[in-house]
Image (cartoon, rainbow, N blue to C red; front, side, top):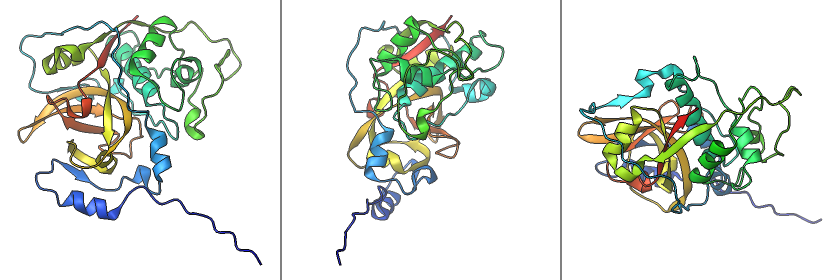
Length: 291
């Protein structure tokens, strides 16, 4: 009789690490094991992120200036109807989720759509061949693609890659077999991080802003509060959308939308410390102006 031994992949989250995080002094955020990732292995978690590379590009750098900026501002309170939390599922598509998500926000905020229309992340994942589909992408490459090629609506080409982590072929027709209508495009995009904290704050009064950051292992224990890196090694890169800013108990923060569904973090959002380029968060970020 032969016995075949099979290795059982170990869960990513560690109760030992969790207890250590809970007992660190001066924490501004609440560590726990997020329901969204319970049972995930190390390989599962790696599939969520992109490789951690933020190369320098030739995007137009601009400094936004505004007189008498409010001490706090958020599209979550200004125009909540223009925002939507999406879930990238088992595909490393945060780059597309953040670019197309900000585009969808800003078409509503900037009055191009009367209500929020969800545009197609799937089209960008499948058709942007410079980026790598479910294996990650670059936030400069994706907005370049959207400026040149545009995207149709999610109603035409719906999101499917999250189910199985596969990129899929670039579609030539809508899901229902009809012709793909004219694509919607970015007019321009500008790196508003170039001007620092106040530039990003001023840009946010014009629309939501896409950014990327370096993810450390402690971020995978975040469930609420104002995140600051405290422990762990680099897991990869992640792209998200800044929707506002504020301050709590003397700690300044950015309001940020993630793409892990509404059950994660603060109903799909998180806060991260502002003004310190925490985890490269303020290194390169794009405000899109839409056509």
